[in-house]
Amino acid sequence: MARALLVLVLLASCTAAGDPIPLPPPHALWDYQIGGPYTPPDGVAVVARDHGADPADGLYNICYVNAFQAQPGAEDEWGDLLLRDAAGEIVYDADWGEAILDTSAGDKRDRIADKVNAWVDGCADKGFQAVEPDNYDSFTRVPDGLLSAEDNQALIRLLSAHAHARGLAIAQKNTAELAGARDANGLDFAVVEECGHHDSECGTYTEAFGDHVVVVEYTQEGLDRACAGWADELSIVLRDVDVSTPDDDGYVYGTC
Image 1 (cartoon, helix red, strand yellow):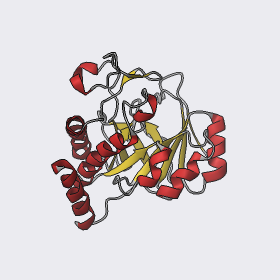
Image 2 (cartoon, helix red, strand yellow):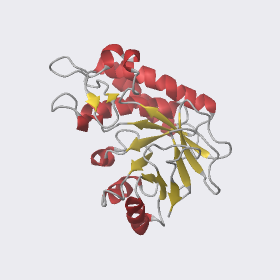
Image 3 (cartoon, one colour):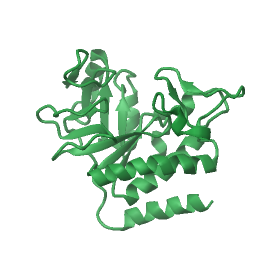
Image 4 (cartoon, helix red, strand yellow):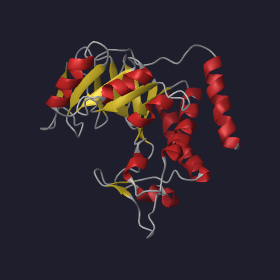
């Protein structure tokens, strides 16, 4: 209860004090560089990079943190905060080999938030303007009953309050089904993967966030669909699924 009250106080004070927190400029060229930093292509105004990297000079920088899952091989850093099934086994995101964090209890959410918010502090200290907490939708890839949408929303509110207190905007990452709750959860804009590939999802995000949506597609078909419907409103980029750097053979970068 005390932590929930603190969240509400921080959110209110963030809105009331000083100028609004700046959001990514709408319909700007952008690049998704969470796989490694490099010199942004010409014309790019917005860049997303991992919290371990430095921001790009002179651009709007979004700081990536893996907030709801552990990085591959990092299980030991999380201890009892890893989600376990009925047999006591760690639950993994099968696609990426990442252990899922246990957001089901308030004390665990508090401890997860403490660790993630330390990364957010680093983002702010380096000069990033926003934070992107990944895997908000982790509750959709676990056995029934282990996690809920409410659990993850309770954690995102802790993160959004802290980000705002540090002067950072905070993104909703994917999770179209919760876009309508953006205000209650303190979320400012959206970072969306493959809303063109999934056809109607881009509209779901724009209904909630207006033109403050940045989109990354991983296929040419997805890019074509996103550009056909939203090229005049949203920031859309094509990247390879490994979000590699230009010195890698698999590197892909494209725009509308």
